[in-house]
Length: 207
Image (cartoon, rainbow, N blue to C red; front, side, top):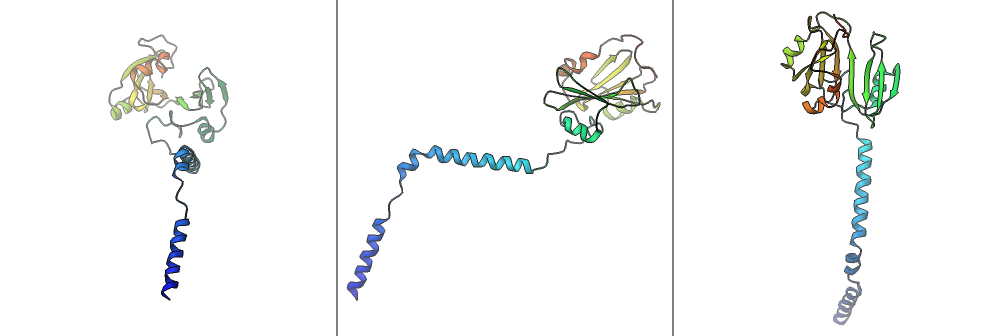
């Protein structure tokens, strides 16, 4: 009985010795292959999660018009929320979409960049003598810039992403521009190029 146990013990030891040791040289030689496979799997998983995750809605900012926020909304968002434009034209920087404003010659304008991201909206307002620039200065304080849009004042609120254009005499607002909040120098070199520091004449729409 004792000899049989010893044989079993020896047999177990032999079986243990027959198990091959890990081939460390193989792993060491091809470690970059395993790393590449691991990174590829991570990229695939990240891509799938991004597709399944709903997009983050833009924050509720002052420069939101009809659910469209410059710097966040895409041209697809515009057409989904506003429908087909009355006119669409390609520009050097992107696409300009026109929507009915009630003034046939002055449609609302939504402008995108070459990537299809909205960067500017121009809204034309119907006359309302109670809608004046004082409502904006009461809420936001004094504008960062006071310029002219032909013969009407353009009150620029850079941090709000808003230009409020109003009559210099009555203060009634007739137009609003929406853009992504920016710095003064960036505004003046882009949207601000259509404004001036001096009144240009009587062509402005006056209430």
